[in-house]
Length: 230
Image 1 (tube, rainbow, N blue to C red):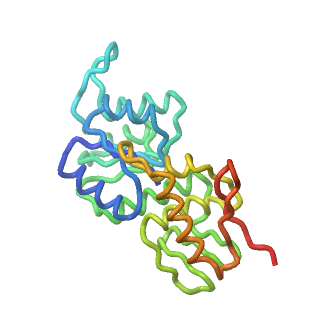
Image 2: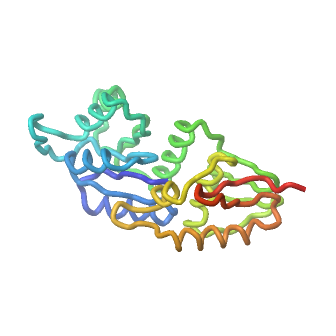
Image 3: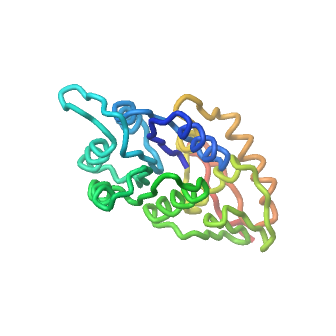
């Protein structure tokens, strides 16, 4: 997944970003509402982690601009990106304000990093209408458990390879261009180069060779997961 983390605490920024990156996600970080608005405008994200209690910045012609303002503005523009609000605010009225502004879920600080990642996966699955388990021939992707099975046997994959496979299996049969895959798996200041992507694809092909599923290259179009014909 490509995630936008909007959080002004540099320590918490670093901890959450590193935790999500360790799981194979690409994470862009913004420390205030104005910076977050810019990133959210120029880049599409699978999900947003938003701290409502951001420092007030001043957006030209609009006055104070905090986390709640940002969320309302994006929803008014029709943006449907799943948003998980992270905040120290535990009062019921403040939780309601965040949800009414368009948040999809709410998690108070302090929080467990594993729960953050699990809730993000659930939000993205729900927004994309995906099941937690996707199967193609004898290849099974279990997003809830973050595991891959071939003939019911666990297949160990590094985080980046898992994310490439997850994108290709969302759902199988969908053609993804190199640019689409790169955008999903790159950070804002770190692009995934074509040769690195091709390396991940090559490794995955070798690891799923006996699964009955394959990654097909469509010249000029990209890649597609499909079931091998007998």
